Amino acid sequence: MTKADLIDEVSRLAELTRKDSEVIVETIFDSVVRSLRVGDKIEIRGFGSFRTRQRKPRVGRNPKTGDRVEVPAKKIPFFKPSKELKDLVNTGEPAPPPTAPPAQ
Image (tube, rainbow, N blue to C red; front, top):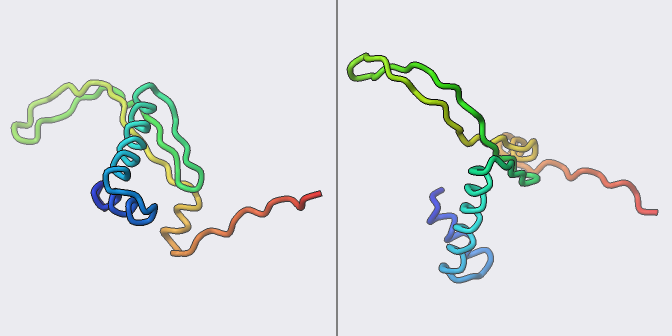
């Protein structure tokens, strides 16, 4: 699925204009990027969590010439899927909802 497909799906399901759906999708993506940029963790219950991981500097090789290349330290985005998402992907059925304690 591409971003354009996602915008079309939001537009269709929410019965919004394509422009409104595009604003919604862009806002969500921008919010995730801004949060990761400042080092925050994003958790979407039932879907998963996004965070950054720090990569150490290392020595790599240029695949064309074989020369050694210094690769600097950097942060990379990392996504960890929730148990519910893993279950949905593997079984095709939603995980049973957690049972709530009886109301008193």
